[in-house]
Length: 508
Image (cartoon, rainbow, N blue to C red):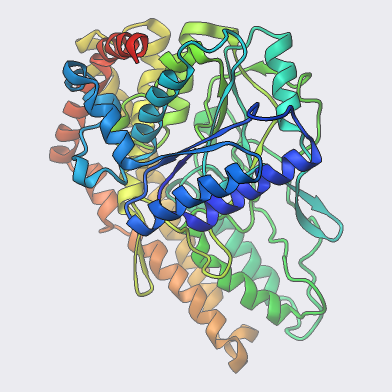
């Protein structure tokens, strides 16, 4: 489990593991163990994580803290092999070995695992890669509201799947908060905000809240993604908001509560398109896969050869990219199953993530241009690899260049079209929000909520306006020239990186 300065998340994750073991005991002793791959930058958090490892070990779950110093020692021990793996394990300085990124951190952790598993009995080990902002629970919708429950017997299900099939790599998914960036959720969320304001406009402010029915909320793959069609899914219509307040409350209370949740959107929440668990037999649900959810995938030790690709570039979509590469090699031995984990982007009390690279907050201004850029070029890489891996042409420079240029042009058109749509929708939101006849503009107690909506609108415009930093950068030819060089080198050198990696694994 990689973790970077997320003390609340990691405690919740490990607490849920203990709860899972109490409810569905699996084995005894060290049959389940945890490796905390600490990518924190704050010395206090590193010390706390080390103490947590001792704490949970004492509670019956052997937990090893793999800290930055130990990581640096392991990378240094690669010796002559270290430069050959710079694109895989990065080139962080020993004195600054935190915040390397999830891909680099996972790859270094895989080296540690290879070292730990040397000499272990063949066929008796599974490796489960998870994220610290997840829990061994699922989210379900009930008549009494949403609930987060420990109701999936993960370990016995995984045991059955890997015992009864020849699966080499299995990916689960997540429920709760979407696994994608707000950089690609904003357009459809604006549809939902518009619908919410239109509905609220027809409500009596002191009447009991009417937003607890399931409404148009549906289950559906990629319903939260602005460009779901890229993944073969039909774009979803607007969703109604399902109020999460309990007890007696009015439409005014609901309006204010929704307004207060808007800031969480920029940190990865999606208040209207939460996903829920649908119970199904895990073994029966196994099917061929193409996307790895990096925070929830399980593999046999021989699959350690599949490191997180292009990790040093710190692109988003590294999991789906890895999935395309794995699928091109092992076909139906790469599977998915109905074993989602609960995903919680933010922590209670702040509505913000504890640590999220590429998101910077100053006063009320939230800038996600860094994450936006990593998302765009992650998409370029993903869909380039999808084409190149199918033809096994990763080392063909001319083919790679042509593919990168074509995919970048296609993605740029989609991103720019979506930007124009976002700005049009934003005008609709403002028209509804500031309409003189709207009851929230005539009631002083709603002034703070209107201000929260206004801050949301301002932040959307900051990140998606015509002069927004992210859009300016992805449209700049000189900027593309730099990225093009880096992407080309990463793709064409991937076969060489694989060879160097496998040689290192043999001697780890």
